[in-house]
Image 1 (tube, rainbow, N blue to C red):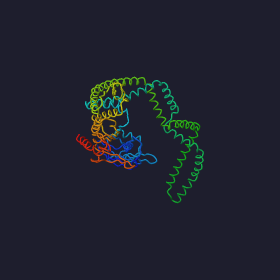
Image 2 (image 1 turned 120 degrees about the vertical axis):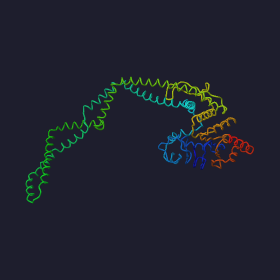
Image 3 (image 1 turned 90 degrees about the horizontal axis):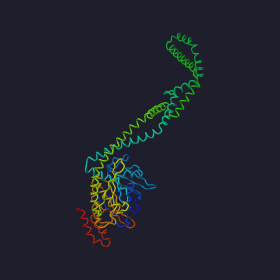
Length: 513
C-alpha cells in the first residue's frame, strides 16, 4: 500500500505531504480545486501519467507482487521518486529507472479505473476469473492446470523444432552440399593445432640463416686457442674442469646449430610461405586453427543430422501428435470443470450487479483453437450488444463487480486509483458503489475521487482538496471536518447547517456497517 505521498511545486499546489492508511481513501473538494491534478501526480509516480511537479515521491509497503530484481534494497519500504528539471527523471529505491520500466514493474500492484479500457473485460481476464472460481471450488484444478501448462510448453517447443526440421528438409540437399563444401575446404588444408606457430618459427630461422652461419663461423675461432687457454690454466695451477665443461657445451651447441642450418638448406622456402598463407586464410575466416577444426566438427554433426533427417522427422512428428492428443484430452477435462465454474462466477457477478442497480449479465463459454490456456474462451454476453455500447457508468460498475469477484476468489490485492466512479449515478447507486468499494478495500487500498457523500462517508480516510486564494491545498480531515465537507456535498455551501445532521447520520451508518 501507499504509506506516504509528497509533492513539491505541483501545478496549483506548493507542497503536498500526506500519510495514507489502509482501506478506502476519499478525495473530495469543490470543482476546479485540483483533485485531478492531485490524482495525476500519484499516477505519474507509477508511470501512468505525465509528471507536473518539480518533485514527487511515494513510499510503498513492500509487496510480493513487485518483482524489483536489481532495484531491491535493504529497506522495508519501496520508494519511488520523480524529479523534473531540464528533463524528467525517475528513481526506484534511489536507482534510475525509465518511465516505461517503472510502469511495467508497478502494473501488478497498481490499477487505475478512469477511462474505458476494454482489455479489463477481455476474454483472457474473464477466463482468469473462471479459473479462480474453479480453483476455489476444486483444489485439484490447480494441479491439473499446471500439468496442462507444462505439457503445452513441451508441445510448443517440439512443434517449433518440427517446423525447423520441415524447413530444413525442403532445402536439405542444398544444406548437405554446403556442409560438405565447408568440410572439404578445411580438410584440403588439413591444419594441425599449433602448426602455424611452428611454421612461423621456421620462417624466422630461414630469414636469418646466413647471419647465423656467419656468426658461428666467426665464433668457432675460439676453438683455435682452446689448447693455449688450457695450458695457461695449468701453469697457474687452476682447475681446468670448469673450462673443459664450458667448451664442450659450446661445441655441442654449435654442432646443433650447424645441423639445423643443414636441415634448413633442404627446406623449400616457397612451400613454407605458401603453407603459411593457406593457414593464414583459414585463420582470417575462422579466427584460429582450433576454431576452424571445431567448425569442421560442427559441420560433420550437421551433415549426419541432414542425412538422417527423414528418420528423425518422422519420430518427432509422431511424438508431437501424441502430445497433442494428450493435450486435447486434458483441455476437455479442464473445460468440463470450467463449465460448472462459469455459472458460479455469473451468479457471483450478478449478485454484485444487483447491488449496483444493474441488470444481470451472462458469461458465454465458447471453444477456441487449443493454446496455453486450453480450448475455452469466455466473453460477456450482452444479448447481441457490444461492450462498446455500455455507458461509462455501466462499464465502470461492471469493472467494479469483476474486481470484487477477483478479490473474493483469489485474494487479489494492490492499490486502486479511481476517478469519479460514482459520477452521474442515482442516490441508491451511489450508496451501493460506496458499500462495495468499502468491501473491496479489505484487500485493496482504494484511493477514489468522489463528488458523492456516501463514498466519502464510507472512507477510512478523507482528503479534502480546496483553494486557499490562488493556491490549492490537500489535507486530511478529522471527524468534525468530515461532517462539514459531507454537508457541503449534500446541500452546497448555502445550506450546510441543515445538511450536517444528515452527514452525521451517513457517517454513523457506514461506521456501523
